[in-house]
Length: 378
Image (cartoon, rainbow, N blue to C red):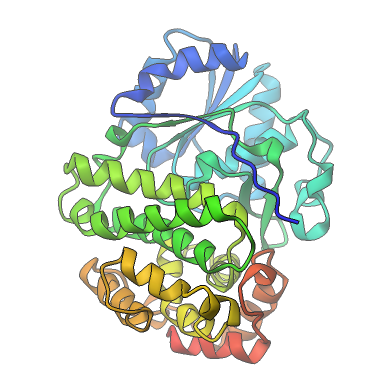
């Protein structure tokens, strides 16, 4: 049975941050905890959000690491309780938004956080008691502002997913203006994350025609504008389309992701210093080649349809086109350039096999096939 659900209210335009106070009032948040990171504060973007709160009492947690951790979630939840907060505003990239989703669980449910992880059977334990959340993305990558999931590195160093429709932010305030100052390398890495979401969810064999349409349009927008946004961060049209691609990828991936994310989630847990979007860019060519042998992908001509959205001649051209795009964006040439060692392959494969995205790939990968994908991505 297909389950198709689109519920998030989205405010999307340049200057949309001005709506933050009215959205808090609409949702019923009177004292938010603003979850962000030091970089967003240093860039002056946090202050724009605080100004938009218009004097609304609030507290701030700016200790979100580049990959959110259970320890950071605990620290923010303590501030939430101590300050008597009644909701959350996440201002930042996927890390800040996912950290806030963790706080939404932990501040209102008995711990530990791991109890609510998807692969631990925790999704049904996440109830409507979660703290209400408004998400304000400052990058164009994860799309967590419209998604039901969060990825957090828990205390035992696993990078786990937490999924519940109760975790969908009550409002996503998508203001491309907040991304104008994003550095080129972060623009490229987060943009490839959005493109990976659109591509991987489109390849998934689950039945969800709306998701397929949203993903294809998002891929076309992302692929056409990522270079422009990276080369000229002030290109407003490119920033708007890249933010839309990010949002669309996450709206679509309720359908499911696959081996790209199984591998990047696992490797990101093994080495939290590695950027998730960059890892997705590294894995995409090998996974597209692997998925080309899937009967479902072949039956629906999914690679050729993606190629058309990317302006390519055929699906066979996609892996090399991604490698060439990575090179033009000045992303690493492969995992080896990121410091990944073959000695860690077994541990990466263990995590990939257990990841929640493993089963939704259109073709189920064996340990040896994961090893071949890792080798091809080096």
